[in-house]
Amino acid sequence: MDFNIAHEIHAFRSEVREFIEAALPADISRRGRHDYHSRRDDVQRWMKILNKRGWSAPHWPAHLGGTDWSPLQRYIFQDELRRARAPVLDRCGLDLLGPVVCAFGTPEQQARHLPPILNGDLWWAQGFSEPNAGSDLASLKTRADLDGDHFIVNGQKTWTTEAHFADWIFALVRTDQVAKPQAGISFLLIDMTTPGVTRRPIWSIDGANTLNEVFFEDVRVPIANLVGQAGHGWSYAKFLLAHERTTSSVVSHTKRDIEQIRHLATLAKTPAGPLIGTHAFATKLAKLEAEVIALEWSVLRVLHASEGDAAGNSVASLLKLRGSELSERAALLAAEALGDHGVAAMPLSESDDATPKELPPIEDDEAIGVSAKAMFRRAATIYGGASEVQRTIIAKSILGL
Ligand SMILES: Cc1cc2nc3c(=O)[nH]c(=O)nc-3n(C[C@H](O)[C@H](O)[C@H](O)COP(=O)(O)OP(=O)(O)OC[C@H]3O[C@@H](n4cnc5c(N)ncnc54)[C@H](O)[C@@H]3O)c2cc1C
Image (tube, rainbow, N blue to C red; front, side, top):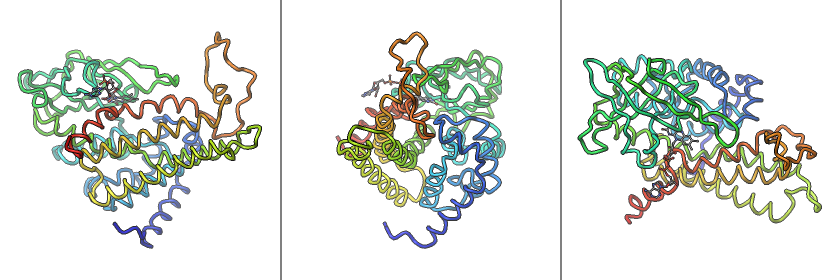
């Protein structure tokens, strides 16, 4: 890998930065600074702006609305979006479903589903996990039985991110009850407004509702909504999960977190002066930053070697494992920098006598939402495949154990 970043790459970064600075609406940018769960209307407004420029899905094939950028250019683009605190785009549509439809969808499916994703018109949710099928996804029970030119879907999905405002869901369903578990699974696109689909919110520890349960009761889904071949859903899911795990390394997010931690630790006071000047805290921050930089180079090396956006499954697992651990550590260190002030920023119950109401929050923009984010980030080593599962993949596929 050539570590001398060419002149054109610097020019590209400047072009992207100038565009984002000029085009990202100030109110969206301000909310992006405070809210780690992006709002649907903000994301949609921003996606329309990006789409006009032809930049809402740079990793898709150019003839389907993507770009012909190199992996490094795509990485720089993501890095600049995070730097500007732009809202996180519709990951389920752009990063998960989009590449599957580009690779395995029919021309009709591509024409119908890709343009609304690019323009942020329709929102997608990922319906893989079930109450008894998370790590052991192949044991999923939601079934789709053929009835003429429709499937009849019955079952339940859970932990479905943003299903409360999704228009469509892509789901793994069992279309063959006797085949081996993996061989009986198909990949189906389901309109959330179809009769028989209901959703129930799950409130997470940070006080937010991004997670949901989704129930299917005799839901009629046209056979035209089957992606690829019946019984091949497992291989499309593996393709999709490699994308999910590569992007789950979230290095650019963690880099922004480090800037935030440094800022907060400069404001936070200790008897010996600003927290950032204490040996213990400065050492933790330096160690985290060094590990994030090392991961960033690993991501760049993988992208360079694969000349694509999805690394192989096992390498994607390495990036996911390391990236999610570092992002959890960064969120916790930001909360540590806030100290007791972080508690004041949390919405604790009225009856909680331990609420230190007298503690004023650190009056700084960067302090808002830090504690809640630290709580939600705990999920990073669970979603997209728990760390233990990633370690097993690495042990088997890379270490040959
Ligand atoms: C915030 C969040 C968002 C999510 N969003 C979505 C979404 O949009 N769509 C979707 O489909 N799913 C989503 N998920 C679900 C996620 O993919 C699952 O939570 C994950 O795969 C783990 O499955 P589980 O929760 O059933 O835990 P389990 O599989 O029951 O695991 C429980 C524990 O046992 C460990 N374990 C399990 N099997 C093994 C094994 N073989 N060896 C060693 N240890 C093992 C796990 O590592 C874990 O620590 C989300 C989850 C979270 C937390």
